Image 1 (cartoon, rainbow, N blue to C red):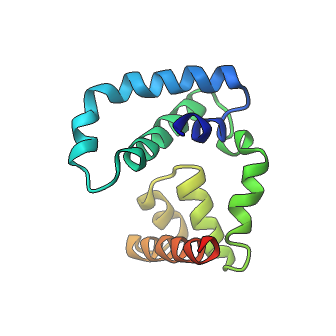
Image 2 (cartoon, rainbow, N blue to C red):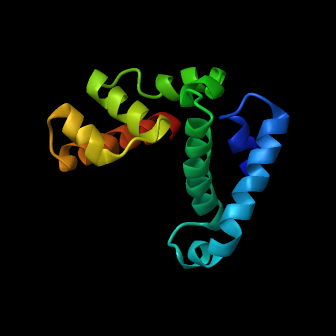
Length: 130
């Protein structure tokens, strides 16, 4: 399941295999945190994998969005009826992996406002998927 998730962000199967191996190498020493988390192990792995994938893409100088292919349209379709501000916050935080503090500063808003927008995005997505 995690391999399929990784493939959404990289263009080739070979790169996905290499990245998945790197993810497991980097997370092996932190598995205790997965078991102590309130999340399922898979959810924890997915969250941590996403951080590593974003880091990998930035180090390679690749636009994080370029590897999403058809999935990019799907992700954005979930928020098509939301405001442009919601879509911007979701794209910058979830897809590009930017920090909430940076986004708040750029928008001239407080961090709580950005948090609220992200929560609303997740609620919209949950309704669409439900």
